Length: 124
Image (cartoon, rainbow, N blue to C red):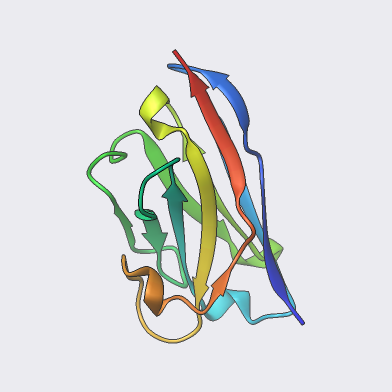
């Protein structure tokens, strides 16, 4: 059975950068819309960014627009989230998700596959 595996999380100072990766296996990754979500302690899961199957269309939450960039490399079955100018409020567990049918979406219940999450901690 295929899966999504995130990596690249860690501890970084405010103003720093991290690049998260989401590696897919056993699936037709190239046809999937992909999304990134996050859950901070004591808060609901929230949408961060999404990208369509080809990479031609992206969408961002207002809180990260201009700082984060979502991308994908279908030849490597991998999606990425480049995070710049990180703030303490970006601290959360970050999850990637894949949607097998349909366009990119901000709704988590419309994604079919989820990774296990990777912790991002931004110190002030």
